[in-house]
Image (cartoon, rainbow, N blue to C red):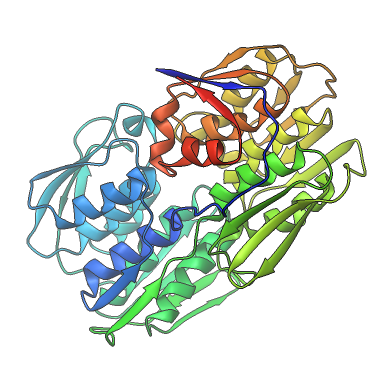
Length: 408
């Protein structure tokens, strides 16, 4: 099914947008709660991914299907490896069965895990039999996906002697590793991260406590884009954001200054204010630590008629889709000229936008939401619009509250 966003201007905002809790924080905390049941969580993400995590962690089924949820696949692979005596099959969608997991599986086997592949080597589905992992030191490639690292760190407190994780190569998405360590520290688990070595101490129990999940910065990116594409003076207010956040995508507040958007924090609210037009015609950004906002930035640049060069994007090829190829295809439908490599995207200046284009979303929530702000410039059709439920189920309703005209 598709949805049409009719060319609109934002209306005066009557109430702030309440974005669901961070999917990244929620999924980490849900796994920690499964390991330490006296941990309570509030403001959990309403995303499909987090609901998949919750259902899986509460399930007694022999086969666990995570569908398109990549984070759940990585985290649950590690979780079930330490569930003593439990044997399960962990599987996912056809796209999930094309997303590599061998680096994580090899690391878990090096720690003593009992698991294997039920199909193509290196890819789901997996057979996992939980057991005590007696070893406490492992080496892992650090330049593929930080989720492999976080998966190991989350189960580390339950290993008999904790974990010493030695990272090889350039570390990808380091803020997401720091997020995992910060949440471990918040619940009272000792960690250290020096150079290429991360250590997590063993811990049997934690104190009773409640953690409040901050709203999702990745989801906030689409409102930064809306603000950037709007006239000077436009403001958008979002709820439950912290200036000193542990989420990596907080770099948005610095990046979008170049697009003329200021970030104002007050009493847990974040107000985005368009204060000037972009001060330069070419935008460059290295996004190895925040790859999930690459689509948003590319579309913002296109909508403003700017050229851009985004680098550090090697992980985008193994997401819900090959996001680099998908961006190239869809931006070129709109009239853009895009060059991609294994880890970069270059967009040339384009001053006209092809009208009423249908954007394909490739089972990727971020494709749908990243292209939506272009409705401030032209009518645009989003195919398979319900894919946003993966991370932000109320996205289209929230756009309507800002005055954007939507028809199905």
